[in-house]
Image (cartoon, rainbow over all chains, first blue to last red; front, side, top):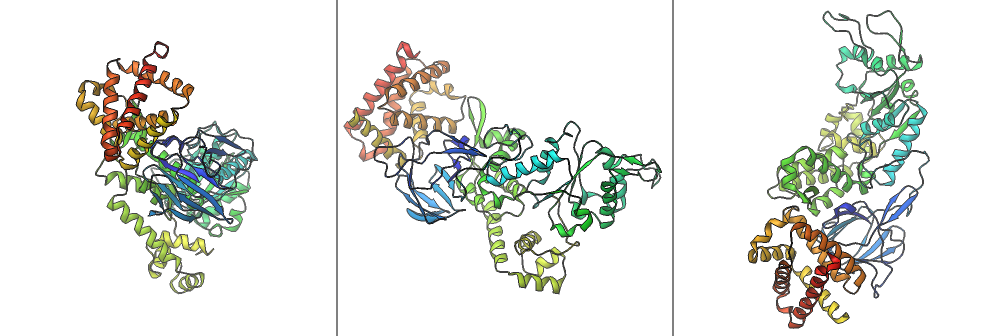
Length: 458
Length: 135
């Protein structure tokens, strides 16, 4: 069980308790009449597990839950304490739970059930990640899940090799943060990262943006520009939405990569050289990229979405709220507690956390951020909870996912054959809520709609 | 000692199970009877103050049979309270508000024995806080 919300101990989010044998969970240390060993909380990180103090949450009884593994993938949870228990929002007293289920001890704590090894494997790359448990790492990545740590390890490995990297992942999963981590961990970190979204570059100016130009070329009045490739000399060029780059530009970029960084500015006969490293990102299937261009990326790293690391959702929520409070003093004053004069935990309703924990994400961190702003903007009290607007938004996403679940691979392929591969049009024809639901469905069935698949900013 | 500890724990469990707003009520009663103490509680927001109060009270009752733990906690409490400007005269005010809140929340389950147990425990804790070694 991973602690996902706690009224009295918000600083303990992300701590977990392993239930491999029957266990008792409650406030304080073991009681003489505990029916099973007391569940102890830990902060688990690669190769280490730091035991933390017993629960001190006043609203949790000294003996609150009895936990017992059933088979290899289920857990029997019995509520024996005074506080009411809910499983996925329904009142329960004795129930089997599985990974992804949410256990609430009424108005005291929320636990997410996860299925994972008791110990996280050691990192393979010798990078010291020095940041407090549960908070963002030096590059802004938030997560203590195995998936988050595996990604950090892969980023560290790629950073040390100085090879070109392709980051794959959904929009909003954190590909730019991953790129910043690669740059920050590399020998190039003293130079500034050059970052640009390929989808925002106008077609007519693409080559000028990438390669630069001399003054007044190709159009009169154009200032001299070094181009992204020139700017990234000695540093890292991060190109987001690389899948939106036309094949012609991919070929031009490929030539630079193939010729050890040689390039020419538009209108300039002189051959220049840029010792850049390219980190590119896309949320499309890799076969949307030109085959030979794709082959230049030595490392392909998948940035996991929140569905693959739900145990990180509470930490992401907390971090986003910290950032909101830091930038918006009136909101901090209204929605946050103060302890000893300093900003402390947000007043966050457990039902909001419980719903977000089970949300079918399409835009991941960006989606949580939008839900939080919606909850804040529509709040009529001094806490952030499930308002009518938030409820409607969450229900919409749940229904859209349920509808998408009914569409099998054969139906999907038939629809593509009949209606073409425009995601917006295809989503409409299939009766899906939007193209993002379609994109998730395509991914689920391993179907690519090819290069004309329109992307979205990541 | 064990019987009194059980009585303290039982009443506190009843209160926490019956009433989510127990700490809020405690401060309402305290500030109504002694408005002059309210300005002392400004460094924490009311919500944080209530959580800290409930957590500390529950922890002390949980450890009531562990004198070393209680002594350590009370020494820390004595020092922070002195810093906030809490004086010797104010401790009985807090005790009265606490017992009134417990009685109100326990309703028909409040008994003379429970009241006696709480009064005795509170007096003992106050003596420890005010002892020169704690200050």
